[in-house]
Length: 105
Image 1: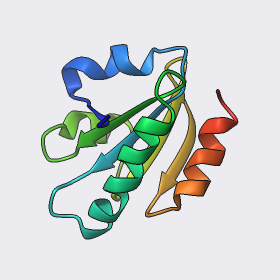
Image 2 (image 1 turned 60 degrees about the vertical axis):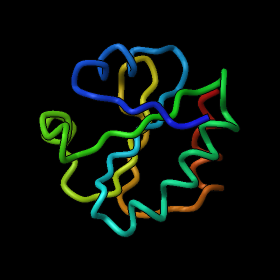
Image 3 (image 1 turned 180 degrees about the vertical axis):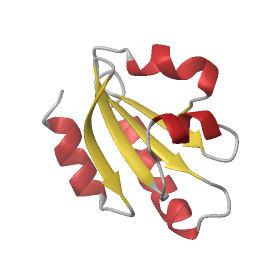
């Protein structure tokens, strides 16, 4: 199962979920972002039904990047009930993301 492709139009509803929502802010041209893509998709499968996993293309959704203060990519924000509870800037490991999501499910 692929991660949800979130947009400005769908973002507020997405993060309002009672489930944790991991959002990967990325861009097609970003090498480190491309390294994170397989991890994000694996997490989408692993946490299906327990957490939502989404991606936001910063080039297509600049309003979201400004609103959430995303200055570097990849940036991963984890939301719970519409609030940011975790922020990771730069690449990270699958285990680190699993641990952070597991604290919230």
